[in-house]
Length: 394
Ligand SMILES: NC(=O)c1ccc[n+]([C@@H]2O[C@H](COP(=O)([O-])OP(=O)(O)OC[C@H]3O[C@@H](n4cnc5c(N)ncnc54)[C@H](O)[C@@H]3O)[C@@H](O)[C@H]2O)c1
Image (cartoon, rainbow, N blue to C red):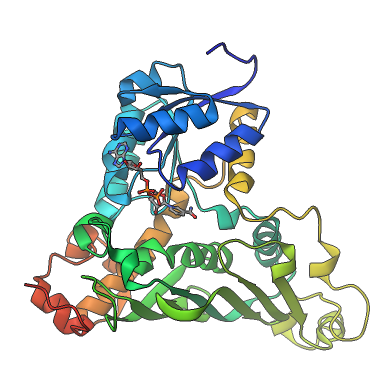
């Protein structure tokens, strides 16, 4: 394939479902040339390559030989580490699908390989990149929306038993973790991105109904460094599905309520009535950061900051990444920036399966959960913690 001057040359590894979202975003971006695809299943690589006008490659080395600068890794979670390390050793950058890895040990292995490579690793957390989240992140960071006090983070989804039919689903070996790692992680990542550093976590995980080795429902109570508290719920048993984050601050309530991707219309800001007057008069130090217009008319800071609506699809992050790479700028969603999310997920399993509170300081390589999210516990012990539900391990 002939080179397009000035375009970023990209490849895709793992040509299944989500690879299509990468393929479509690359195809729609005139500054990108999607040149190569690889899959352990050659027929999948061929089908994807034909769909997007790329070359089907038999190996990672063959893919990199197509002179690619960035490779999307869209393989199942358990193969993320080996694939990403191999690509870094071949000197290319990687856009790695969530969850970046299935444990912190693997994440640190990738970080070591990244430090030794000319390539860099970016992680797909597309919900950080929609215009709503970018606005919320900026206005919370500069205090315009007040100081967070309480938050609720819900991933209430529904997956029937048949969802777990594929051999790699429903077990620790294939998925590395349950819905907290595979599904709730999107909302958890966004919550942490908006709220900042968490310090302590207490969790419960239960296997109520699905034929899986891990949880089908989990809840956590979290304390943040600034004293705020959050409740986090992830479920695969919830018929009316919703993905929701609500943050109550000293100046109002910020909320995003969507399912698999939001637009600006899915965000709302409810200013504390009269917060602007109180803040202006300086009568309440709690409200010093809040400058919203309250319920007294006028345009509040959230509404006033609205710009171009960019839904939180893959294209939102991919377009930003392409612009950053071509301009030689750093891209925000690095591997390192997603470690707190993996720490949170690790702490949730350690707390739920170990029956104890977990702080970030507990998450050292000495902790079994650092190496695997089941903590290396025997299946019977995991079952005792989760409740055996309808699934009894042999
Ligand atoms: N960001 C999102 O919203 C989102 C949504 C769905 C899935 N995902 C993530 O995308 C990844 C893939 O999920 P999917 O639903 O597309 O899975 P999938 O099963 O549809 O596709 C995976 C593909 O990878 C191939 N593969 C497996 N091992 C490989 C290896 N070692 N080398 C090369 N190819 C390999 C398989 O043959 C298959 O074609 C997972 O990490 C998943 O969590 C992200």
